[in-house]
Image 1 (tube, rainbow, N blue to C red):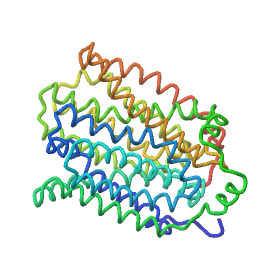
Image 2: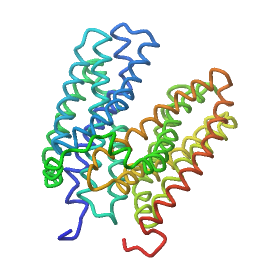
Image 3: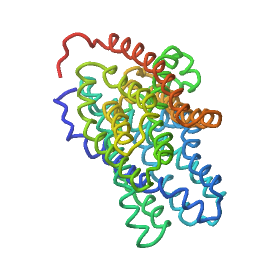
Length: 401
């Protein structure tokens, strides 16, 4: 780069859209099931509507990558913000559960566009030696939004009911789109070259880089599954041992605070010592938490398990994006990142499904132990391949910060 990089130079375009959009999503997610119930959905149907966010993300990963490769990160962020605003406004006014389900899938797809595009922008905007910190802070901005959104949403519900939350989410998506349009279009030259040569199909790119998809992509799937444990398993266990919903919410809030405190230190450690130092704690903390969970029978011990998970997640903030960025080719980058995004989403969606299947035939404690044992194997996989990635990137030798 021609001059010294400073985080404040990219603060607004890099972190502003993420923070603003995450506030809207953070406000919307806790009340989505309630909105479905308000429209007449059964409890099972309401849970299904909530799950459609993940479905939208899964089915949108590869098409989103293809679109971003053609129009660029800035344009993709702007269009995704506008379309997400339309989806949220539609969720506020739709009279049927069916159309609510449709717009929820659309919102999940737009969120995937947002995730891949902002990652690509950061690869261009930030030098390698500060990449992990930059992407950790991006993950931190996302967490702040998800933490603060429900607080704003709760106040709005008191004033004007559930629909007000979705209208606020729509307004915030528009604001995120406007902020995204202030970004420089850093990849325009590469897109012109790609257009002249012909854009590579997504599946061809993934096949060409299949080794990275299996090894690093597999690691990202494990990390995604590990992160999903907290929201999939811990609330059920808290209810199982007799902890009230309000106390469970307080435990989650305390854990979220711990997680936010560790975001920047985790990024700094990655920049100084490699990706394994942050990736391994994500998987290891989830595995250990599952193994000891049957011993947690009180508010104090459940809180300890939650903080253990939060610490691993905090240290690993941004690590999946960083590893994807580290392995992404210069050409067909968006297509590659879409594949990596899909890997993580498969893990996040698969972990709750596996828990559900295990809990159907075992006790909840037994299911947790099985997940913990699988998590130990997953941790070994993550440790092996991230250590190899670190060696390839030159970590283990003296690096300048």
